[in-house]
Length: 305
Image: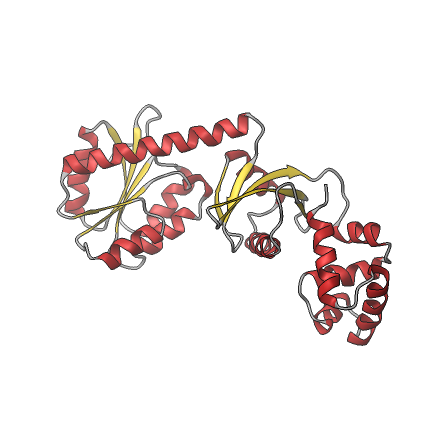
């Protein structure tokens, strides 16, 4: 095993079999690659916290943390989003192939490994990864801070600038990342149109998301922009509908699907008081029920410029 050199491809091999590691080390070094080794999944996670390899070869069947779990954990690291992971295993049945691909792998090679075939596949995936990184870097240079999320609000990919913005805004905290995913999923369920924007004012450093397009019916293409002011969602509702601050608070939580009882607990008021606020909200918005009020509130928030 060598230390990483900036002028060589860095391959991380994750395998608990010493003989397999020795063989792969010889093959990859002959192909002019720097080889890093992890004997188990947890070691791979530790190594990738400090070093970003160009490609990862991952044994599917390992003790403690198997390859599928390790792959999912590795892909949670934004720095590894474009790093191809190739599974290695003696198992070739369809179930394990599908598990490997679903967990984030890009390819699957069976043992015993054919050295020439392995290196050829690695070169293809390395070339694809380089193109993806170049495209995202170009988007950043053009000022297009883009990212994509699925229907559940889970991030699919993002440019480097977006990763940095979200981290600076506080999404490194697991609770805030979960809230971001849930907020996006709720927004997507109301089918925003291109140009609609959503304030992420629950973040320590507020940001705004602009919806650009729906790709392949499941990938939402988004742009991340700095929030131009400190105006919160309740401020928007208060200004838009000429309601009181407390009524705006209630309306916001109605838009978030909360019941009167839940709103009362959140705002420290009785459900009866919540209902009285709702009566005033319905009158001021010219609607007859909470569904219509929620729809108007959501539209006002997603159309915020």
